[in-house]
Length: 477
Image 1 (cartoon, rainbow, N blue to C red):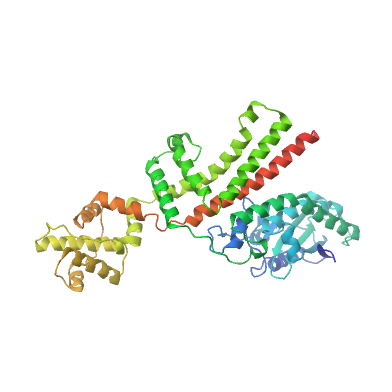
Image 2: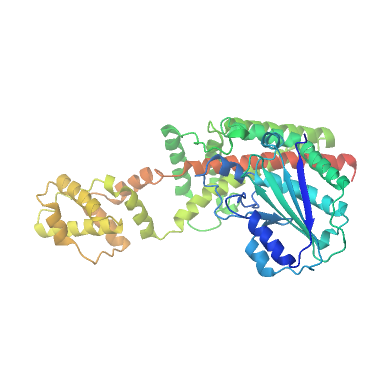
């Protein structure tokens, strides 16, 4: 039995636009179709979507249908009311593969199936005797059955053929084209499978649909990465272009590269990173052998350009984290920090505050800080109880809060820092606390997954580009 199964049918209807709309509704049902968006980043995002449904790479937008240009919004298609002659014929095809066959031949992600359609459908259209520029097509990937399968619709905008029957020879050639596509890319898919397995800790492709946990990061790794990030972020200029290759950041390029290397040398990615460097080195030597030791090859231009591309992507992710933080207004930053950390802060009044009016004034400061942190009543009581105990005061916490609570909780930045100082946190102590705790909830998974994603994408792109360039030069086109 063939591993490439194709079913085709055709029909003419009275209202062709309604027919196409019905097809779009059917194949685009969320419970059936793969909704991963085909974006411009590459073909790897949906690996991580399949790997971990909590991943930051999970798509925020869904698209269940595509055409030759990528994602299709069915509502937009219906809204455009594509003008198609009702005499045109509609062809529906279903192409399915046994699950193991699909996985073993690199048909894993939605992007893999999209690439397949880009290669086979133009030939199918011409083999059917249709005009490429006069024929529209849509496709959708379904995984709701044992075997993954694609639904494909073709239709002429203006009819040029009268018979809808697709000859057996055309179907046979379509199967052959699918097989050739998979064979031609077998080396590429094997390489990707190997590298993906290395990056994700030996996860088999057959287990991709299962939710897996990412490897945990050790406390020592977190501490060291915190230190490197803080060192870098404290040196970044408050203004100017914050991009990896910008002149504005030349003076801290070494610090930024140090953070990137530290991420790439984590246990979960370092071996794949080493293999990537070996691949670049091998290809650079191939270029030397093919084209001689030109100045570019002597200086390893190709090697360095590809490595810089990877570093640029990871570096810009690191800088983006800083820009997001910097974009917040000062008091919003303080509010975010206090909301997460105020319950662990040990407020204590200066021993100079002996007079009752001084104590009440400090209590009002503390109440405003609790309001800034958006604490509820019970958490506010906890903060006040600790402050009363640390300061060795004799207050009933509920009576005190009732006495000093006010609707006027607005604070300027100057008032805020003065209040902190009266509560035992001068600027130096408060800054040290923020530096220690700011990255406590840092999403290391985000940093690492993005590094994985960029590395895998560059690995694939480098392999494909080099093969194409060498083939182009050797064949003398």
